[in-house]
Image (cartoon, rainbow, N blue to C red; front, side):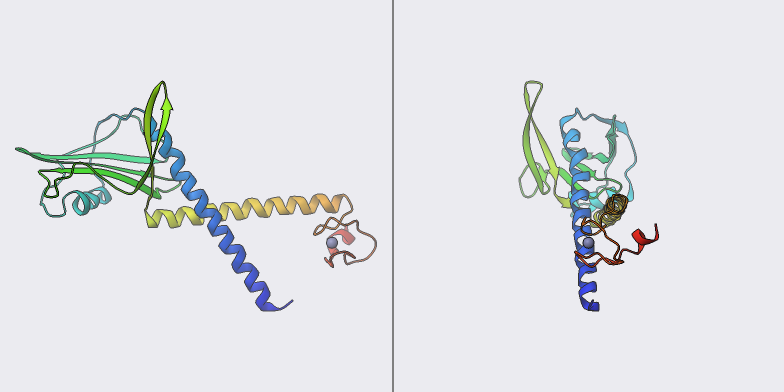
Length: 214
Ligand SMILES: [Zn+2]
């Protein structure tokens, strides 16, 4: 078997696992995001902003001003796989507010933000980060759920590797189980063809050392 062909197969397999890991990462972020947007969200628990949240506030909500958030609240009921914070600042008639929501498991991998500044030089109301809104009918009302589309690259990378490794484990286990079952039934573990006395499968050429020794 040419060596290059094996390397190619390994690369394809790793890429496939990483792609699967990325799909699961998105699913693990959107999974908590839907109930999060549909539940009643009360930000009434006073809290302290994390360094990442302060960095986000400075960069996004008030890049031109020197104001820091005066009030920081979190949800009364937190949801697994989500971090949400509400930050506010006010002085006389000026005020700013921001909601920063992060989703994903095991780490937060995708986010969605809303914020506003008054008086705002651009004159627009609430700013919305990249998101995918869709309406859901619930309890006779129409509610909008927002799926987060802004990746948090560090978390996305870790989650992708986590789910890729998990997929590899499950797929390896599954393949091992299938092979063992075929051997038990007197069939080639690779192609399911009935095994004779040959040490090599007459159909696909698979070495049958395991079968011969048992
Ligand atoms: Zn075979």
